[in-house]
Length: 426
Ligand SMILES: [Zn+2]
Ligand SMILES: [Zn+2]
Image (cartoon, helix red, strand yellow):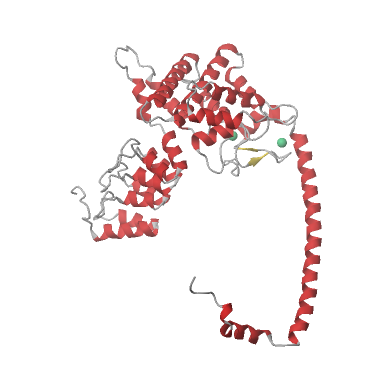
C-alpha cells in the first residue's frame, strides 16, 4: 500500500473518521479489518484517525488504533500537531499517558514552536502537562547503560535499567510501594546496584533543572527516588532485618492514632534535601507542608503526589493503607476502617495496626450508633414535615376549590397574561 496522502481517502476510511467521531469502537474495529483501510490514513488537514480519537478524548478508540499499529509520532498535520498534542489539548490524562507509553516524542514542536506540554499548559490542561513532564522513556534511561565519552564502563549496568525504569514509572509514590518494588528484584536490592542507580537519578535530576526547557516535576521525582534508593542502601548496610526493617519503620504508626510518623518525616526530609533551592516547585511544596503539624492533613505524601503526578481524585478513591495502591477493596474484618490490596499488604501492616484496630472498631461503632440515632430523628422530623404539608395542602385545596377550578386558571393565565411569558428582548 502506498504512503498516505492528505485527503486521499477510500470510502471505508471516510467511514472510519465518522465512526471515530461517533465513538463507535465496534464499528471502527470492523473497518480496521477491511483491506482498503489504512490505520495511518490522513484527512484533508493531515490528521490521522489516532489524532481524531485523541482530540475527541476517546480512550477506547485510541487503544484500538494503537493495537492496529497507529503511528503515534505521525507529523503530517498542517500545523505540525501530533497525537500527543491533541491528547494534551483534550485534557484527558489517560490518553496522554497512553500516547507517551506508545512512544510519543515529547520534544517535537508544532509550527509555532510549542511542545505538547506547552500547548496543554496554554489551554489550562495542567493535569496533562504533569503527565507529560512526569514521563520518562526507557530510551532516556538506556542512554546511561552505554559508556559515554572516556568512560570504560557505563554508569548504569544494562541489567538494572529494566527494574529501575519500573520504579521511575510508578505513579504511586508511597515509599512502602517503592521499597516493595526494589525488594522484589534481587538485582536491584543490593547496595552497589542501589548506589549506581542513585547516582544516575541524581544526574537526571540535574539535567532536568539545567536543560533549556526546565522540568522541575521530573527533577523532584528523580530526587525523591534517589532518596528512597539511598534509604534502602543504608538499611541493607546497617540493619540485620534489611529492607523488611525499612518497611516496618515506614509503616509503624504512633500509639495515639496509628499515624506513620517515620514515613512522614522521611518524605519531608527528602523534599527539604532537594539540591536546587531556587526551584519554584520546591518552594511551593515547602510552603504547603511546613505549617502542617505531623499527623494532620495534608500529609507530605499527598502534597508530593499531587505535585508530581497531578493525581486526580486522590482523596475519594480507595487506596491501600499499606502500599498506597489504588483500587484496594479488602477491608480489615474487625475494625472495617482500613483497606488493603490483598492479604500480603494486610499481613505487613498488622504488627502496627493491631495496636489500634480495637480502638478504631469502637470509634466506628460509636459513629454508626450516632448516625443511626440521627437518621431516626431525621425520619421523625421528615414524617412530621410531610404530615404538615399534607395538612396545609388540604387547607389550600379547600380554599381554592371554593373559588375556581385550578386546571382552567393555569391555562388561562399562560395565554392571557403577557407578563408570565419570558421576555424575548433584553
Ligand atoms: Zn497494598
Ligand atoms: Zn482493623
